[in-house]
Image 1 (tube, rainbow, N blue to C red):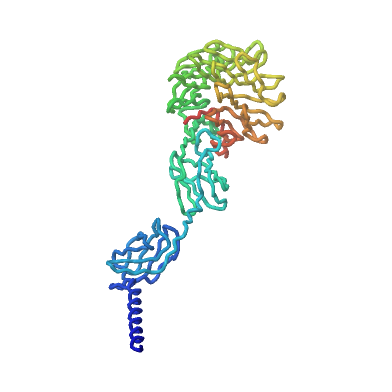
Image 2: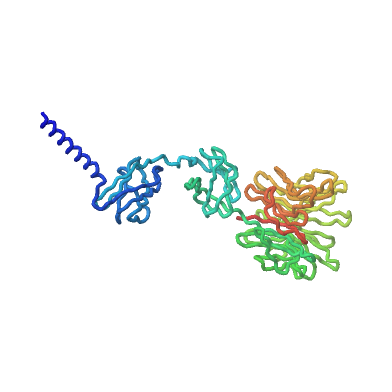
Length: 512
């Protein structure tokens, strides 16, 4: 029995020795390959693990469990940087090279922090038919963190300013320079494309007027707020853009009625008497100009229309002062407005001329017409002034009617200078002008649906022209000593600095 017991002990010892050797064989290798440590010991897919050890060889394979890790860079004999791959689960880190193998400790694969990235469901413009730089868009979804930092980047590699962050949306201002294409959202280091957007560039603005140099009023053409000089000009009154060609109407330093075509002066008169071009329009490739030309020893002005540089109509004969202030063309007919002085009654008669036929707008009262607009079915609107109880009052005439006063007061002056039909079908209009306040100052304003007051009551300002582009109202004039362009009720451009100079803007054209 003792021999049997002793033999059993020996057999048991041999078995345990073999088992121990088998256990050590999993990390036994001929090259001495070994993992000493690695960090971190947990992380999501995409985590880079730094493995330190020895004898890793020149082309090792690294695994987490059964998933092969991607080696980042070139491994050395003592360290490896390996990335946790997609599909990996918690498991032990192992390194293999040329048949040798070493298995180290366990790495815990955790849930990706990407789940904190918000979910985006839609992108839409907040109230506009199209998206322009300066508009605000809404990025709608869920999981937005009001305390978080988000970066929204538009095609053109420009970043939009985030104006509002709510749990279910953010609002972003479309920056200048943004173009149609993808939008990306960045949050806590993660960047994703969240959608695409079509962006229509803002239109260009063309404005004429003057800046005083302290001695003379120097005519200017401003394109998007940037001034340009006009050759030999002493006034610039009207601007029109046809295709890529810019037309400006005014007067030369030689007192010639002049049209500048892309900056080159075209003279309508010979300079023998005073003449000035007040308004210009292009129709079917021809340009039409309304203005005046002096005649006789006293250079009494007569109302004129030119077409392509040649006299088209002389509305008056020069026996009494007259002037054509604005011009339009519709269905081949030429429409002009202005005034003619009646020497017998010593009053001005507001006039509408259709081709060469004159119509009296102001009746027995003195008045002047400054601008007109033509709607569908050739409905004609005219704006100007008519005297009422010794007060000059802004008035809107619809051809065939007696007119409607537009000022808010019957005891203070108001002036109408320009009209633009926002919708020729519905005949919705915008009218620019000014109105005297109780303190005696004039306030620039726009009449029409949702009228605008552009300058404060305690300042001095006038609005001289208005242009509607899509849903935006562009107005020009001045406030105190600064020539201005307003977009809706906000200043778009200050055209001069107002320091030791004054300026006025008289006409605007807006075009993409």
